[in-house]
Image (cartoon, rainbow, N blue to C red):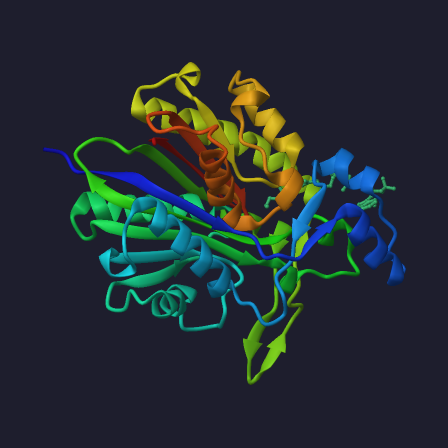
Length: 325
Ligand code: UT7
């Protein structure tokens, strides 16, 4: 009998400090940076985001999300035999945030590692966990997307600092006789490294280069709308399904205009798209599991439905996962 993987629990966590556009506009105004609620809403759909307190790390946000996902799956931390954390804002250069999270959770002993694919990180991590479960290397995986992007923003750059937020989402993925994850499709094209990056690095005991986020928004936008459609059609073809079989599109939450464009291309009405970008901003690798958990906990997304998860981000990376919940 074929071995599949299936999501048995979801969880998420947002740090308590919430900034509306008005709050951020006022803070930026004190630095002499001009922006407005109108510009942010019209160009991105974002109305608010959450920022973690200075003493809160990526692993702390991931830990809360993981606990909620374990509770939903009715499992204990010691039941988990694989931990993958997708993040671009790790606690340390090394060890991985997954190891730090594992220890905080009390799941010591199982393999734990990070996946770095920026905003596509969660679909990458889910695909790796699925492959490890299918192969028999793991049976109960915890897959987490967690980010503290507020730490890598340049608050003097209005073209980027209004876009991002902090948060975490998690799923428990278990071995199953029935699918589960139906298909996935991952890609990267390293020639676009420069359009979305944090170019700094640690060397000789110092930070070299610029350790804040740089983005050519228009270039990212154009690439994103093209590749997301291709990845969606690729996972549908691999699973032998059609656009009309999708119950929910749960895309990376970067910009409502990108999400509307993808929905249009897949002939899906917007009421089949889980949207959290308005309240969370862009939380990079955390955005898809945050949106998934939001959908599940509000009762919109239900067991047995077919979900299309899609990510796109720095690298340039992109990918999709089609699954039955
Ligand atoms: O998570 C990874 C994936 N990331 C993405 O998917 C992001 C993709 N890109 C985008 O979402 C959009 O390109 C942005 C939201 C980043 C920008 O929207 P846009 O419609 O492409 O705006 P733009 O960059 O063309 O800028 C338009 C104008 C410019 O002024 P001029 O040159 O027309 O006078 C900017 O200087 O808006 C100005 N502007 C702002 N004005 C007020 C840029 N940022 C701001 C701001 N407030 N915060």
